Amino acid sequence: MKKPTILDVADTAGVAVGTVSRYLNDQRIRKDNRTRIEQAIADLGYRANTLARAMKTERTNTVGYLVPKFDEFNSGILTQLVRSLRARGYSIVTFHHSDEADAINEALESASSRRIDAIILSGTHEVTEKVQELLTGEQPVIIFNNDVPGVETDKVLVNDEAAAQDAVSRMIDFGHTRIGVVTGDLNGSTGQNRLQGYKKAHEQAGLSVDEELVYVGNWGQLDGYTAMDRFLGMENPPSAVFFSNYLMTIGGLDCLSSNGKQVGKDIDLVTFDDPDMFRLIPPGITAIEQPIEQIARHLTEIVLSRLDGTAPDHPRNIRVNCALKLRGSLGVARKASGKTHEDS
Figure (tube, rainbow, N blue to C red):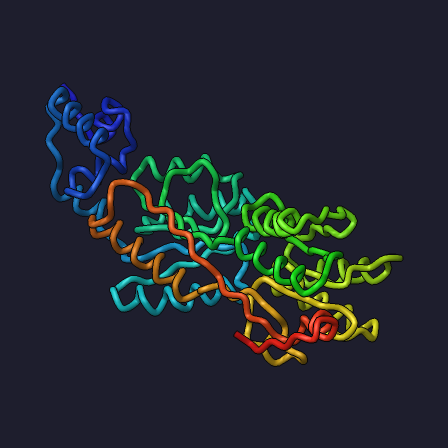
């Protein structure tokens, strides 16, 4: 009679082979999975091959980092992760997926086949099924920045909506009632939430949103340039513009320069993201600063706790807040109101 294998145990228990492997190596798995595996082992009379088991489940001490692009934000997170995880003996393998579902799925498959110990992912709703498949195999997947809705796993996300609402509310407080917004791809939670914050600020102030002032781009400099060019060409242009990321802001600034317009004099501007250059570009760009070090610290803690078995049974959903840095790009409103503000 053929001896039962780990595949037979997985099939009988109704779990992934990786889950059985983790059980055999005394790693943390869900209680219901453990019960089913133990029953399957008893029913089949399975005996593990200790040597083969050790070879197949040896840790690689690597963590996968999957992001759409290596911009200021993602590169900043990566720098912090390399520093903190290297100190614990881990290296990082990076994957660039351009927010394309096929590319994300391929990257996830590659990370899984390389036996990478854990995956840190900025993804989209289009890869929900693949992420759930990996989680069934008990491979830790931690989501950050851009949510993957419907997936029950650890997440570290920015309070995008609240940060955007606070920034636009501040613009309204300064006297602006006609504010343009340049947002990124609305297929992801980041674009959706930042646009929602813009709209909620208007609603809170009793202002209606003019859809003519809503420009949906794809997070790039050309989007910012095109949006600002369209705004400037309007018969009744906005007196201020809120940009949803720094790359689109740079495009908008380029357009203003090309048209002989000055920030803080001819038009006000506020942006999400605060790279160092925004403090240096006259008159200083008012920006929402994301807590990169704090995000990376949470990601590191979750990865390590999942791998050493000390994490709680339930997924953690961590939301971090941002800080608004007030600078001279709110100059138009400042002159009108007589107020003065310092970088804070």
